[in-house]
Image (tube, rainbow, N blue to C red; front, side, top):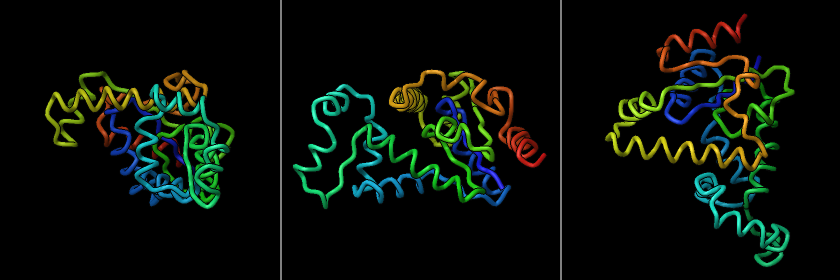
Length: 203
């Protein structure tokens, strides 16, 4: 009975490994499920949540957050309609992730789980890293991308990751002291990484 959070450098295989872990342990894999729950809590569309995750930290997003409070916007659009900005997104993440953690037997991908569940005694925090070129190759192999498209995806993914953690007020997300286990995916296969996680959780 535990919760596994996976933080990763984009392209290191976090989603693929997370799905493998969930299947092996018969856990729920939380990724799209989190998006749908955030949509429900904020009363906005799933597409709005996806857009928020993609644009968080952008100059326009920051400008809107600074100039207009969520309370003001909600009064303008009406209390019965939803609204999401970066501050509200992070607040809802804390609520949603903690609620799922209480259910146990879940694998959470990204979204600051290692911070939100830092004091959750049944949580195991995993960090995946890999060399830049290996991450590009991974995206080419597992997502059928050209090299140029893979490079762009990895770069954009890392930018989104950095922007998310800025909203947490954190920049130490790659530091090993936050995690129970660090996996260098340039030196491990997915199968080897899976075994390491299973040993950690079941010992």
